[in-house]
Length: 330
Ligand code: ADP
Ligand code: TRP
Image 1 (cartoon, protein in one colour):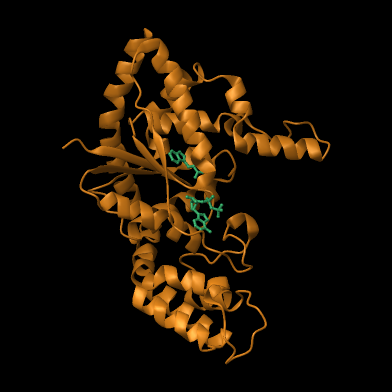
Image 2: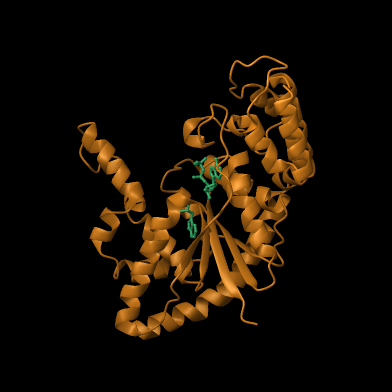
């Protein structure tokens, strides 16, 4: 059986929240369990460097993300788990791919385009605050993917364009040299978008998140802050319009969800509903929280796991890059 490589990167730019867990981590861990899949998940720390320019912050984010994935069930024996910055071959490939990437393609990449348009709107120079890392971000991402001949790339919707760019770059290279690179495809999770405290998408850019491993009292306070309508206790409530219910059902069994739905119809008070949500979320995260804290106090252990992963990844990367270099005449 030929296993399909499924690869994804996790940018180390912040503390993980419940939305990241439900929308990205949980589905990726489920994919990794499939027999016919060869999962490769990595910490995209060099992508984070396009934004995070503070030594300790970058380190804490990278370790935090590694610890969280392991605590939530990633098995590093089954899944290649590594740090992007431990694979120097990625960067050799970045240069090669850069020479096959038109500047126009980068101009159209949405992260750069969004900053540029905002600058223009505000009357600044269009490239104000844009470093070359942001500009060529999609090429680094293409190298992450193409170096390992990944077929499927699980990502959030906002990353689909980057996978398309990786395909474009690979196609441009292949049209000159034959089928060297596997063309990747994005795989967008069917998972719901989790709302945050204010009802908008939970996102660190909106400051409306519930951090995954927040201390219990902080998590409780945050859950109590979730916005609700003004309906009174005993009044019928619409579960499908409620942030509380939407988050609850992602952590509950079908049976628990149906029971809660009925409680909403029966007029559960917002206070009680929040208490139920807190119970189920903190119960689900109880054991992972312990493991997470253990890893965060034993960074040497994290380094060991990530370095082992990097070595195994380099066993694939080194010979493949050699082939690529030979193909172009180097
Ligand atoms: P943020 O919006 O907080 O900056 P990221 O853009 O870093 O989050 O997202 C990392 C991953 O988590 C992506 O795969 C994204 O689709 C997923 N994700 C982020 N927020 C949510 C959410 N509220 N609901 C579901 N998935 C989410
Ligand atoms: N750019 C992705 C994000 O912001 C992270 C990432 C880096 C990635 N390299 C990747 C995702 C390769 C998939 C494949 O979420």
